[in-house]
Every structure is written in structure tokens, then in C-alpha cells.
Image 1 (spheres, each protein chain N blue to C red):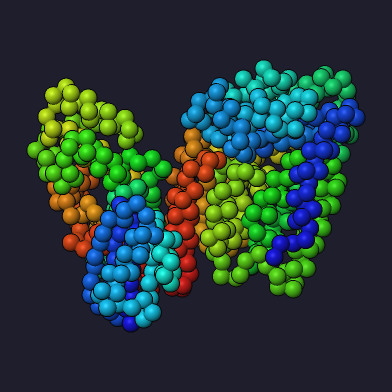
Image 2 (image 1 turned 90 degrees about the horizontal axis):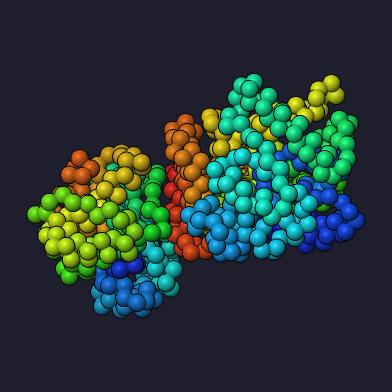
Amino acid sequence: MRPVIMEEVEALRGLNSVKIKEAHEEGKKVVGMYCMFSPSEIAIAADAIPVSLCGTTQAPIEDAEKELPRNLCPLIKSSYGFAITDKCPYFFFSDVLLAETTCDGKKKMYELMGKIKPMHLMNLPQTSEGDDALESWHKEMIKFKIYLEEVFGIEITDEKLRDAIKLMNRERSAMKRLHKLNAHKPAPLSGMDMMLAQWLKGFNVDKEYGISLIEKLIEELEERIEKGIYAFDENAPRILLTGCPIGAGSEKVLKALEDAGASVVALENCTGYKPLDVVVDEDAEKDPLLALAEKYLSTPCSCMTPNNGRFDLIKRLAEEYDVDGVVDLTWVACHTYAIESFSLKKLVQEELGLPFIQIETDYSDSDTGQVKTRVEAFLETIEVSLATV
Amino acid sequence: MHYIGIDIGSTAAKVSVFEEERLVTNFNMPTGWSSIEASRIILEKLEELKVSKEEARIIATGYGRVSVPYADKTLTEITCHGKGAYYLLGKDCTVIDIGGQDTKIITVENDRVTDFTMNDKCAAGTGRFLELMANSLAINLPELAELSLKGEEISITSMCTVFAESEVISLMGKGTPREDIARGVINSITGRVSTMLYKHGVKGTIYLTGGLCEISPFIELLSEKLDKEVITNPLGRYAGSIGAALMGQ
Ligand code: SF4
Ligand code: SF4
């Protein structure tokens, strides 16, 4: 049975697209962002609404392929497709876009997208290690702040930045607490609902409302744990899902896993736990932009080299959530995650001693049968081993 | 009590029947256009064999497993192939199964599947590819394998089945000897399998299952390519159905 509050959480989808329109009509500014490296605090401090524009549905891909190569990550194609077809209200109402130099595909796509709307590009270092990287990322934070001040004709004070940091930290902690509830055995919330709740935060126009909703959900789930009501029965294999970001419309692997009887208890990806792990330093003495640079640079994304942080995080989550297997989802043509999968497999199988599978797919349903077979076979290997211990 | 394994693949349906612990019979037939139809015919055959489905436990596997309405349980072909291979070989192994639609590498340790790899959604490196190429040369699969033993090393560069087919046709047009083309076709499959295998990692004996295990020239060339001995068994093509039946016990 699904928690009652999930209905309200899900309703955020419709609600937010109306709210973004109203906000726009009231003259509020909107900053469209694409990635977990985007410092939404700076947009909030500029009194604007940050929204996440990263494409998670198949629908606009056909249009995108008129200009982009077919053999490209579906996330990039979907994002671009939304931009050129006016099918996404959030893109439509965005006053400016924020892009980062992450993977090659995204980087080059932004060059085309930048012709549609005003865009600011942040130059991301290729490593998160060392002072040079932090220094340059700090400078990028300053540049983005100046950019917003100029386009919106406002001043972003340190005080406003600190308030925004506190607000976003509160959102992060609420989301983190929600995520951690699934460390309970059995998990109280399905992976599908967890994904939805975390993903929807990216569209939240009214942050306070969103936070209170998540807190209500946490309360309901805590009551459920007490009463012994769970999302799956206690024998359901517990899965950690990692890899490329997913969202509504691109949840097919997550769904296939849960349809086959698994309980996806931890989502390590960008639309799950990854951005919640580290909060921004709230120290009043510290330059808030430096604090932001530190936090965002610590994102363990495969665009970084080396990217040991991801392996450390997976190790930690696998233990904390007591998982029975790890599934690595890579979108077709996502080279960075696909290459990392080889090392990840070694880590999971040899160091953690857990079953591992990499599933490469796209947003289409052309391989639904194959994905289903892989997922089911993977769960069978787990179930057989669970049965023999 | 009978334990029956039914493996409905994309080209052939395989059935294995155990009477208690003893494997009593195996039979196979083309899947045809409908797996539902195939599963109906299988039921008739079982009745002819005096095996009643009421006093049997039936496990279905393979891509058509959902079309066996009388099955007690369904399992994926990966679990069943692994189980069946272990039964036939009696020890830890790395199974290569070149199926009609997918090629799988399966690690079996202590009678259970611990890891597997499956090709992506295109047909390159699968049995379907071999069949199509044999068709373009107007021969059947065993003939293709036989012919390739006499061929010189050439390579078919296209991985995509559609392009490879036109490549084969143009090689024929240029007058390249058929045995060389056949060798090229086999090489492209063994090459693909060998990269999959390398990435997956080998534990124990390499064991080939599925329809190709009856074609000895193929096994010879595969062993050569892998530089390791590939073992098989006359019952290898029934690994999936045998494994399914065993999973029911
Ligand atoms: S995976 Fe990397 S590039 Fe993609 S959204 Fe996350 S941080 Fe950004
Ligand atoms: S999923 Fe991979 S290829 Fe796609 S945008 Fe993210 S990092 Fe780039």
C-alpha cells in the first residue's frame, strides 16, 4: 500500500507547472538548470526560482534527432528536444539557462541550446581534487553570481546567499532523512516513490511547501514502520541503483526491478542520494560562494577524473542499506558512466562480495523484453543465493 | 512425480522430462510463429509420452516462457542454462550460450549462477546473425561451419547484421571464395564472443550450450579464437530445459 501523502507529492507535478506560470506572470525570474553541479542557492539569492530542466522522457527525442546525432545519450536528446519544441513549461518560462561543462555531449549540445535562450556556462574543472580545482570553481561561482546580478539588475548580498544556503540545506536534510528511512529492513517506501519524491524537488516552486510535504511523508512513514507496514515483504531482494540520472519517464529499469519483486532501497544517482550527502557549510565567517564551491565540487560524477568519491559512496550505501545487489544503469552513449562500470563491477563483486549488473538502455521501450529478462535473471541469482544461506 | 522443463526460445522449443531424479527424455521442435501454439503441441507430446501435467511440476523458461499457460513457474533462461550446464558438466564453469536472439556468458559456481553478461539489443554476435549469413551464401549452418575450416582468414568488418549481409553479398560478387567468406562470418562471431568473455572473466571450464554445440567445426574455431579449450556435450542444446526441470525439484 502506498503512503497517503504520496498522492500530494505526486500532485506537485501539475501544481508546479501552474505555479511557474503564475510566478512568471507576477514578474518572478526563473533560472533553468540541468545538472547537480548547478548552485541553485545563487539563483534563490537572486530572488529567482531555480528549476531542473534535464529531460527524462522519450517524447521530444524524435524532434531532437533532427539536429543532434542519433547515437547520443537520451538525456541530452530529451533535454534538447524539450528546448526546441516548447513542450516543457519550465523551459518555456525560464528567463535564463545555466549550463556546465560536464560530459562532452552535454557541452556541445549547450552550444546549440544557447542560441534559443540566454545561457550562462560554468566551466567545471575536470577533477575535484586539489586547490586549483576549488579555486577555479570558486571563481565560476563568482562569475555566475555577477551574471545573474547583471541580467536581473539586482544585487546578491552575502546575507541573501546565506539564507538561500540555509533553505537548500533544510531541503537537503529533509530529503536525506526520507532517503535514509529505506535503510530500514524492510523498506517503508518503494524505490519508485522515492525516485518521484526526490525528482519532483527539482520543480518545486514553493520550497517551504515542498519541505513540509516531505516532512509529512517522513512522519507517515515512521508511523508505518512502527505499525510494520512496508512497501515490499521482507524477503524482497534489496537493491542499490546507481549510474545515470533517472526521472519520471525514464524509470524503466527501476520499474522493471520492482515489478520483478525487488525493493530498490537506495538510489545513488543524481536524482537520488548523491546530491544530498554533503550539505553546504553554513559557517557565518566563511565566504558563502566558497562554501558553495566546496559542496558542488564534491559531487561524485563520472565526468570527474578521478571519481573515487562515487565508489566510496556506493560502498557506504551498500553497507548502510544492507543491500543484496547493485544495479548500474548506463544510458546508451554515456561514455563516462559506461567506462566506470568496469571498475565498479570489480569493486562490487570483489570487495563487497555482492552480485552486480550493468544495464545499458535508452528511454524507448524497444528493449523492454530484454531489460525484463536481464533484471529477472539478476534477481534470480540473488534469490538463489539468499535461499542457500 | 515428473519434473518437466520447457525452454521456448526464439527459434526452437526444447523439452526435458525427469522422472524423479532420472532424466528420461528430451525432445525439441521449431517454435514456429507462435509460442502459444508451440506450448500446446508440447502438451500433446507429453500426453503421448504418458506424462500427465497434473502429476508433474512444470517450469517454463526462454523468451516464450510466459506463453506456457500450464507451467507452475517461470524462470529466465539464464538461471536455467546455468543449472543445466552444471548438471551436464558436474563442475564450475563459464557457459557460453549463443541463442537465436541473444548471446549470454554465464558463470556457474557451486550449482548456481553467480554472474552473467548478455549482448545488447542488436543481433550481431548471435545465432540469428550466423543464420542470416548462411542464408546469403545459400547453405545451412553446419555447412557454413564445415566450409569455414577450409577458408583463409578474412574479416567481415560490419558488426551490424544488415550491413554484414550486404558485405557478404559484395564479397561474393568480387569472387572471394565461399570458404573464405564463411571463415570471415565465423570469425566475426567468435571474435565477438571472445571480447564478451574477456570482459566477463573466465572461471572454470568453458562450456558451450545451445544449438551450436552440435556443430563441431564451430567449436574448433571458437577454441582456437579463445585459445582455450571449449567443452560441450551432446545434450548441450537441452541445457535450458534440463536446468528448468531441475529447478522444479
Ligand atoms: S550525472 Fe553528472 S553530469 Fe549528469 S546530472 Fe549528475 S552531476 Fe550532472
Ligand atoms: S547520462 Fe552521461 S552522457 Fe548523458 S548527460 Fe549524463 S553524463 Fe552526459
